[in-house]
Length: 446
Image: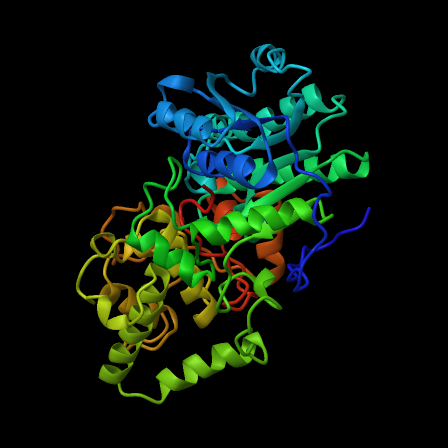
């Protein structure tokens, strides 16, 4: 086998070859009554010549706006029908496909359905994985299996997500489901079948999946380098995706450097530190040269700056240093990002619960100085944060064993518990802040 790291590259500028003739015929759109599904259904009729549209969704004609959408498509000159169908149910899907006539054969499949069930990997059970996998991955496989032998299908489009390419906080299950779509597109392409998996970024137009995004989530996405696509721009990218030969494309507004290494080459990268040890020494040396009071002030500034960045604020002044992280808007996902940022900066291996254990920027700053040995008390006792709950008052150190590097590796391989392993996954002390986990929002897919 061969290990490869995906790299994003801009599509060449200029026009790309388009289809010689319109699609015509019938298009089947899953998630067809949702926000993006409705947009694409209109586009298929107005720009791609589709004459009949089957709008599949869980509620079908009972879905909000379904009647209005059908009436609009009809006014545009197409036949349209909203159908209640679980696309992952092959028997139900087969019945829908049986309604397609020879006069209006199936020419396009657009799979735009999906649901979210976000959370940290350590709290994500099988049910959360299944809820996301069924409408996204299982439905895609069902569509493939039931249409692969239909020769009139000229477009097979899967709405994937940048979450599966860039990695967005709290969406391990969603990223995995979209990874299935990308793999399916490559498999169909290799078999000579039409296939386009579009890994969408965030649309400015909210859908059922993204309607819950608040300003904090939008700012977090922006901090990751993911902007919002306006409707016209998104539809132009849809058209372009249908005309390029690549089976997997990313359609997103990317800017800045973001926090994902995959964005290098898409936008200018920040200057990288010369090496991890130099970064550690610079922080320690800066603080060591200050008085006790100045150290406290500077460390509070550092915590404030990185908390503001994780929350997507443009200035650290937005973070009140005596307000709890929870009140500032830090959920468990943002708390992990704050931990990752501070771990990358200080070289400390910080527990995933550190923000909850030291619940204000002032308290966290004091604890970090203690861990760096820069308090009047000198170097602190080694703490075992696994003994600390996320809501406990934590100023009482728990003395734990000090291990050598070799002993630590042996412990990880043979004796580490689940909490330790997840903490190890969550942070890599050898990564700089460009390479820590991307700080996307709860959803980046319409």
